[in-house]
Length: 309
Length: 309
Image (cartoon, rainbow over all chains, first blue to last red; front, side, top):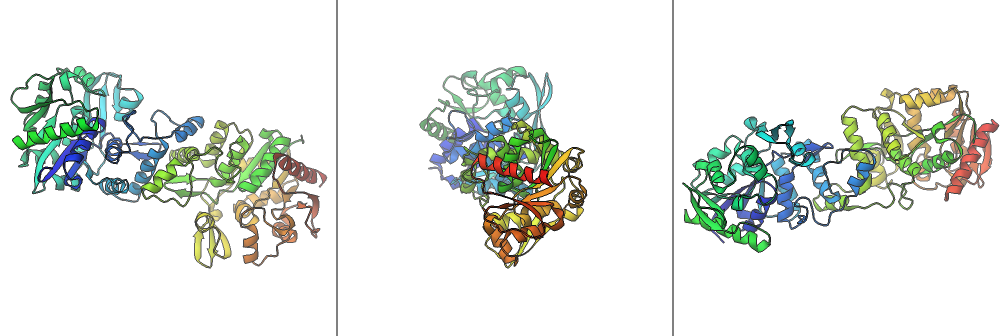
């Protein structure tokens, strides 16, 4: 156990693994995950928060390890029936998972902010760590591609990341403000470390940093800011990180990650297979997280790195 | 097969059985069911049309015979997950059934009228008979009881019809107009019969008749109007018909049914166990519909009665 509180900036799958590891080495109530909500979208009239749900399911022990999203022991009878009546079925919603979207949507319409809803959904599933949306306002990732501008889930799920990315925009970010719980966690007197999870920097972390006030708060924090590379050995573990970097003309190596975060971070946890990055404090570790032990081990390594700064 | 078209006024379960029987003896496309929508309500942000869905499921061969509502081979994982996160779970929604409510709600929000949505949902499930909501406007049954005024599903499902009924109101009916398909079916040149299904007259048929224009069109139609008693031998087959009649001070016999519809109907199909009603043409038949053969047999009897008038 370390002294003080921890904040983690995270997207979905990859980041959630590290958060699950951190939850084992810090008291869960001492940890706040600030989660990307720019992948949120309205589908079939339901407000879906993919990254928040991945965090909740992962920390609740309900995540589907095979799919990498959604719930374990899921059934798909809603989707089957929806397809039969001609509904839009490109985005799969499991029967149990649906409860989250229906309840979240109902509460949003009743005027509850997303952060309060997230807290109550997480608590109902026994999650003790704090899960805070980056903002309570709507922010939407749009991907400018060779095939035009696409809403994130259209790009990511419907088109399976096939179009070539030219640039990425976070619509609404300029008008958003950090969720009060995110800001409070970053400003806590006993904050010991700010961790940037090994999520896609361009798609998952940049939207968080695009919310006015969050990057500034990171920079002005007395606590060390440390990132875990999402690109061990220059390869993305899962998802389109490598493909997007190539399309944006960014070299596939750890130096690019260091350069991307620049002076925002004080240290970088690199993989055993990575070359030494220039101009940044770093530590080495096997950053591939296959087992829960791997997750805890990477969590320890990143906290040790923070402690050394 | 009879010549011409048929219109049936119906609520859910009991009425749907007769409609299923009629579908066997008339060409399905020659039959229009005008369905009560005053039981419709918004629950968890979803627009639920219980009677329309019962009709669609029954005619599609998908109805749940044990429950009397919802779909056969249903799973309940959404409900289980909803309960786990503290959602409102007094109204059960099956995983497959949910697809109807989600898709209907989405289409309503997109501006499609309920009658067009109903037609496309029914067609997608292979239903050839015409299923027309009584109106495309919102009408809501409210039950004035000893425990105050209750919305219909609150009375019917949450409170299991326990409160004593004093009177029943159809909020919004005065401002509603018949759905165009309902009106067109009632005005068809080749209309051979108008059948009032053995649904609850006070809760399921009265709201249809409360839509301005529908009762008038029945009265002015050249086609005979015939009803099937919902109270064989003075007992309700299922549901609160008998209880409500008692609470409203109405004797539990077929004469009360004849009196309720009065001059609106030209004939009444009574049960073998009923005494002869006064002042109305009638025919006798076993009106309990347990098997599909029973349904077809009752359907034949009511069409024969109409043909004799």
